Image (cartoon, rainbow, N blue to C red; front, side, top):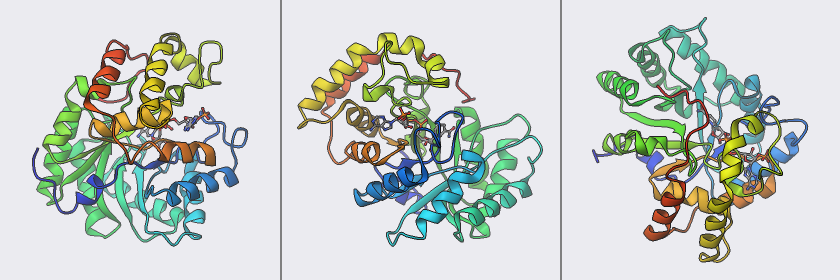
Length: 317
Ligand SMILES: NC(=O)c1ccc[n+]([C@@H]2O[C@H](COP(=O)([O-])OP(=O)(O)OC[C@H]3O[C@@H](n4cnc5c(N)ncnc54)[C@H](OP(=O)(O)O)[C@@H]3O)[C@@H](O)[C@H]2O)c1
């Protein structure tokens, strides 16, 4: 592993974060139907009370509402928190300056002077990683973000981003990608190892595979909406995995399947950022860190999920 730069060291000290896509998103997450602002505020507060200090949002979550709600909630907090948000490369704003302008918009919505981590949400053929990193470097130079990350970048693009940001004098801090027991693509394609080699943090999104790994869904009780379509086949193959996770959780004083799933990501060297819709979910998720699966348990979980095919179309490229 290459040495972790001083700028990025803080990110490696965070075991787990809190995802904020659920905050205001109606289409995928049913905001307004399954959860309200008050639920979100409580989920946030319990997370912070239980030691979660890293919040991941994006300008596109709830079309800006996630960032605005975060700003409202932050005003009531006196704890030091680390804020990450993302630039979405819409086709109509792909220049270097657009990135700085977009971050200023995010800062206005969140109500802060700067964030800790600014990430490119996903690659696009309309803007090269080099141009993206020029814009990100401008954001650092203007004091608008402390560090820079990418998301959904495959290895080649990540290295191009890493190299061009290094030319500007800044180390690329992270790559946020889909990583869970049911989607181990980043282990298999070498991206996880590459992040470690480069001293970058791999931030794992959907670490509960959209709630599947909590064990509450089954073929007889599938999640609603888009997830039902995405996860139909996985649900059929899930029961033995959940059973194993529950067995392993019992060995650790009654940890739940979801907590085992989050701890597995941590043991692999990723930082999980589970989303939570309410206080109970956030409280349970916070119990996914602060303890450790044995190597033998990790190996058993690996074996049980090794041939899980990826049914979801990935954006990583
Ligand atoms: N960079 C990207 O492209 C990208 C993509 C996806 C996500 N993300 C980030 O990663 C975060 C997490 O990923 P995600 O939200 O896709 O998936 P996730 O964390 O795997 O699943 C979150 C969902 O699982 C259910 N859940 C969570 N905790 C639970 C618990 N303790 N018990 C029972 N159910 C529970 C809730 O939905 P139900 O109650 O409805 O089941 C919740 O909305 C997002 O919030 C976002 O910040 C980034």
